[in-house]
Length: 129
Image (cartoon, rainbow, N blue to C red; front, side, top):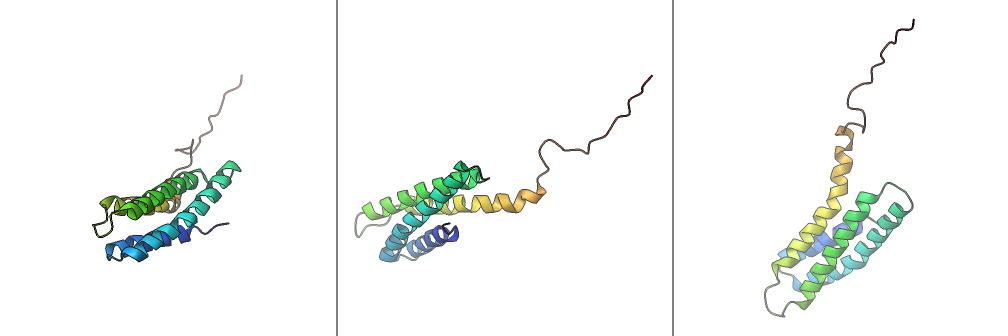
């Protein structure tokens, strides 16, 4: 099973390196995040296809993979010497948000009432003649 924290950590490091104006490390960290994000997405999708409860994780990891690829492509194709387009930061921030959605859902899960039962069931007595 692939690590779920590795693509998150690499995307965070790429965003931090980009914010610190370290162009080369940000580019390489973004490129390293692509295969890690792909591995996490493939594992999540295969878990969902096997019937495990991983649909949300599969969707968010697929979205994060797309955003990491977009950020890496835009950063690589930016003109040398010019400012990096803000789309790179937005895409990486969106990928980090997508990675955090399942964590937030997991934390809030105990607060959710069970489906189909919002009140305790009451039994009515029936009269027989």
